[in-house]
Image (cartoon, rainbow, N blue to C red):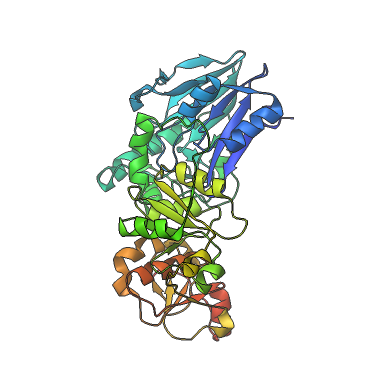
Length: 455
């Protein structure tokens, strides 16, 4: 049994595409690495294993989620370990390249690996003189490396060159050294090609195309070419993590609001987020509501499409978990949660409120006219309906006028397409039909074959 099998518990946030890690230090204490603000899974794992978190290490100032390190310091008395160069404004042990922390038998050595951020550290875990594994955060990830454009386009190449040096440094570790990245498949901080979330140095030397690049210039070209779009909220969270998220003393409330209170909030600039499944939103919704079905990717689209500065009211369906809404919002710094509509959608027309509907049809019933594809660029390039107009969902609010009239709006299954239709409705476009299905199903129903390649 390897070290990871006996001592390491990965905690994967499927929606954000990230992994945190809980390390059993062998004496009832634990190390947490890159824990997010939603600590429910980590606390549950620690209780199950009989562990108390004594150290909370952050590899970098995260852009895609708020760190849980400050909260762990409050909850368990954990010592926060992070880069001294990050200038964090809360109590922590600042580490520089080569610094070591005695974990009581195991040691943690800080390795400066800038690229994803300036102050990025990887943490090498040592058992005696043996390199057990390395927490690589957003430097070396499975078959790729994390993006280098989060500090602005003008610094993308500079940081890509730093990333080149960081990956080469990590590649000098023994081949059997396990690699435990934070970012993985589904993370907008990275562009991995597979689904594995951990690896080894030896495996990456054989399969990672960036490590196979013949020189620094080729590495930079390859990495920069892989960079797609990312959520707008990424631009805010690094600074919030530097300052330190507020400590929470319990689950923040999401109070029930009657229809009158919801109307008042809307009149005062609040916004309605409808978290019900796409089909329920299509059948009846509050005009102007933004459809973001409550699923693993909820936080990503909340942060991409709405500001964090306005009160949010949620419309929920039967059995949906209010606590899940709260944690998904809070983990990306959305704290102005006014409440949820008491009684759900039926309460709105019962109180005299107007409703709207959206056509939501399967491929065999979809019209054969214009087709609007709102998936990410990489998805579109992999296979799309011939003649499709492509506007990524994250860009659609600014390009609503470019959406063709009477279009079928589509994504991979229908959820993002319903979000897109709700954005277009807010812009006055009510002529859309949403595809309940996949592009391949639509193409087959209309006698077409998918095309690949970009626009």
